[in-house]
Image (cartoon, rainbow, N blue to C red; front, top):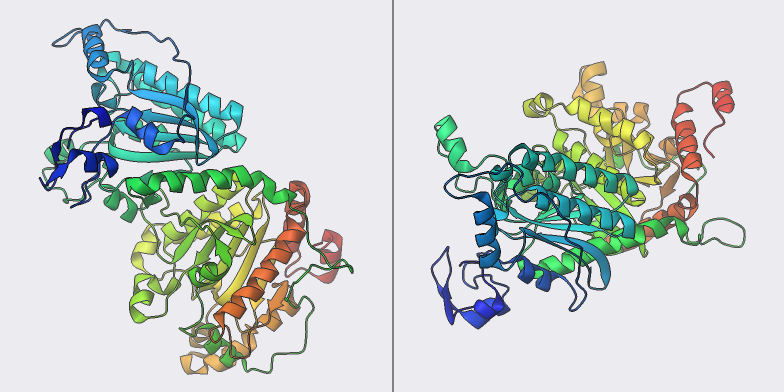
Length: 571
């Protein structure tokens, strides 16, 4: 199926992929997606804006003047002649259209590229327009949405075309500094200079099914290395598997997905301004967590260990299904992978926008294997860090869910810098300028757990465990006998009550009589109440006070009492 506008749709069109004939009006109604095989045919920039924006809301941005033929370039035809023909055939004056508009009543600046115009190539005019669109988003403090379709930089403009990559990259950096959300919609194809600049510098990257994106085209790669590439190479599905895009959404879902993302931008600044809800005595309303050390748990530590590892225990996604509204799960570390043992994205808890990051296990053997038993690889920690940086940019509090035996024990994880990935998370969370609340929902194992645990408040479920090493590992090293894990569990004081008395945990959430797995809805209700109380407490605090108290919290751990007093303790 070729690019077309509704007015130019033939009575029948043939799908480029499956060759099925489709009635033209149905094809238009289905947003130019084949009803048989799902192939997403390319569409024009005007059609794209029509699909995404509220009717009548688009207001074009002024078109800046740029050098038309800076090199006086001639190949088989003069460059000026190529521009004239492109304008006549497309009805456009350049390869991108930039507008102000609304998406489900949420304001945004949208730049949509059109591959028909010289392959959507990035020249001085396109670069300047993308930069001006970013300037408009900055001035209006509204999100910037980029819809990309390009073969790369425009060769006829030489080195000046290459410089547009740096220009647009700088424009997006300014939006980062200002806390303005940026989103890319990758359409087929997106290559070279566009892929290596503004298309992949956004906070969220969404791709249409089958859309291809890369720096070097597959034909050049095959010729260079002399190997046949995989059939799905550089497709959206390949990119998602390798952690390079956040999600794949069919064309029919793009508008609603963008609207939900735009809502998080709009509401993010209000996260600090919500009125705290307190009882008359000044304590947080509805907080079920025990804050003061109580009597030791009647359970043996080894029983807590079994409870914490129970396969039926709710996972991060289970809890979110009960208590969150509007979560958008994001994927990938933008480098190499997307560890399934870490899940996360923006969500709403009790109406409050937050960024959620958590370990994810499963309930069946197949789920556990698919999620690596909740043991993240380095790309999982890097994904978590990316989401936390996005939270800081948008002013969203961070809520983490800890439930892991530990970091992934494998050769590949070490080759890809597991220790460094964990260390970088610790450093990042120590100074993240938004409230952070961590909850140990099950098993908190070693540095793999702490990588999500540097927080202003740490809560734990009653039968959860938190330890420097697994009891089995401790017994194997110190007693040289893994069978003595029960002794090790007691010696390590891994239960939540002990963690509370040590000051590692700030509150213990009571579980239903039959455990969290017996009544997950009640467990989620208590967890939600505890999180709401903590967010009420932390969200109004100035950033300086938040970072000061977080520093005091961890500086005091393991210090002598006099040193803790001098440090001031956590307030």
